[in-house]
Image (tube, rainbow, N blue to C red; front, side):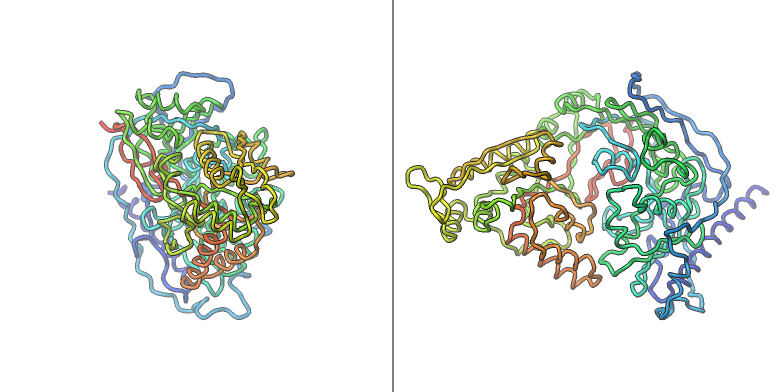
Length: 638
């Protein structure tokens, strides 16, 4: 009986903290509408079972990082946990350059009800867990990657593989996108609110969230990480949008964060939610970027995500094991995930077909091989942030800069042929940088067509002619148009096959096209450095967010030399327009402008796909892909 009473007291105490935090939040932003909590009054999206107990069960093996060690990979290894008492809340500092709290709350002309003297009545938040299927814990899945990760530091280079691995280890952003609705919902936050008149967002942290070593995740971790990430001396390449947009980032107590923006934005939470916290008690005083001075960069020992790093053998494999003490995401059903470094996609597919890999995403040109494998189920989804393919123009050169030439080439381009040929049928046509399926996509925009007849008519109207002897295109002065050069990345066969398509189509138009391929690093150098010795280039791009106003980042420091300020200005207006109707009007204008002016020749958005053995369960398709839950729902079938 004594034990039961003690547990009830713990629940009441923690529940009271939640109510006090919510009360504070409503006092700060009393006149701005209701608090945002999951499922209406349900405040905690995934409360941990440890909410009603004074101890947690951390899981903190020491990772082994080596360049040379070679060990035998087994599927049965499982690490065990030990009990560690919960650490008390740490004090929160407000170190420069963060403005003090009173700067946010004390304004010369505060909005009505900003500091309401009368507390707003709140319904008690229901502390209920999201039901999960009851499944046996166990299983060790193996996959493969064609490329090696660069670093596990969340603010390191934005290469795709590094980002995928870091998402397994770090999962404490305040908000997340709902995988079905794509709307913001609490993650590490218990509740959140935005006051447009004050241009300020408030977040109340959940009281049950902890690092993998059992220490609580507090506002001090977010504040410290924010200060480090936006420190110019740290040279984080992604800092610019947030430095420009955030005026202050304040932690008035260990469970509250106040973020004030410099202006009104279309999606303020896109900016206020950027911090992925690092454990201050581990990282403070260590190097931010020098791995030889901070082992946490390549081998993090304390994390917030559902997985822990067990071992990283560079150029061979990386293994993650379940974090039994995970509190933000639920602990995985699986014991471990291993990703082999296999640059040879043919070998990886052979291993998948033999059951030596459990799941794999091959390059597009090997999709059909995977789809034909007898033991493999193929999953498909239309990503909310698809990678899209395009043909770029060097606007420093005469012919590509001519609108008539770009329009003629667009008329010649059959996107269905590209999708069903090089794209293996895995794509949807695009005519602007807004992919079909996005809520703001519009269908009624310019779509150049008509094939060769229309292409020749467009060029003829612009003064071009063709030589009678061989059909070569002549410019308006009667001079032979020069041979054009198209450059592309040589990795995989997709770009090469697309290059051949454009070489053939331009030959039919009377234009010679030379194809030149480079490995990725040299390809980028060719595009970004003088003498810019190319006319056309094939590329792919993926927006950094589903927030459409950030799609315009493709035009910041673009390779093509395109400098029409109208497009940048339209995107800037859309990014700062909170009125949804006005913003949609701007985004419609952007799509129409891109489709008609052709700064790029947009080709198609790629479809997402994955091959997995029949023995792997829990895979769900959706606009955020089957990895949105960080593999926590995956399991091995009996």
